[in-house]
Length: 181
Image (cartoon, rainbow, N blue to C red; front, side, top):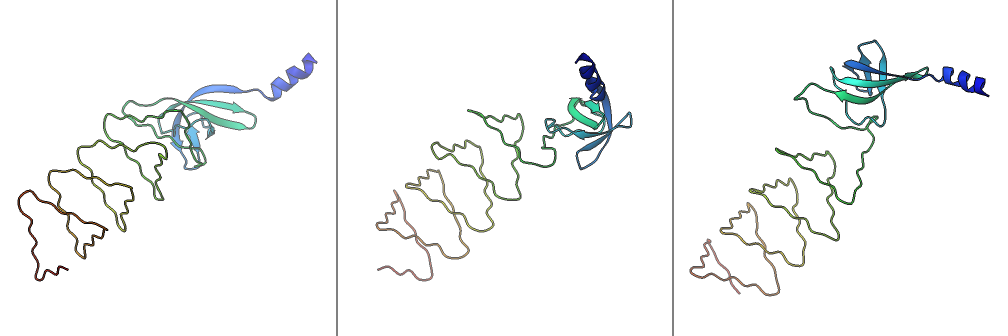
């Protein structure tokens, strides 16, 4: 029995070695300084870059890049799924913190849902650009501001059961023609 185990171990010998990346292909393969071509392992979410020190695992079937160990200081880290699959993060609380900027980009839809909670934004300035429609739905929409200026190049429609406009000092309406009633 020990002889069979020893034969099996010889057939499936695995070597772990530190390597340096000299070239990266878009298909998840990396050319290493030793001449080995290693496929990025599914568990290695950090996208390797030229010059990275990596841990490579090799056996008779091939080589896998299992971890990025070190990178030149100042270089960023790109996290991606080998094979461009989805990445899902699950936790009771998830936080993203940055000392500078945070960018969320998608060529398709971006969905933020909080069906039992609130979406709170606390910003100095908020800019929204909408190429087609901006739709706001709510039981109550409350806006409080020092000054409010809006301009429509077409028509402004305001329709309600009861409509109240109050001003403490002046109410001005200016048009070629004003129809009331």
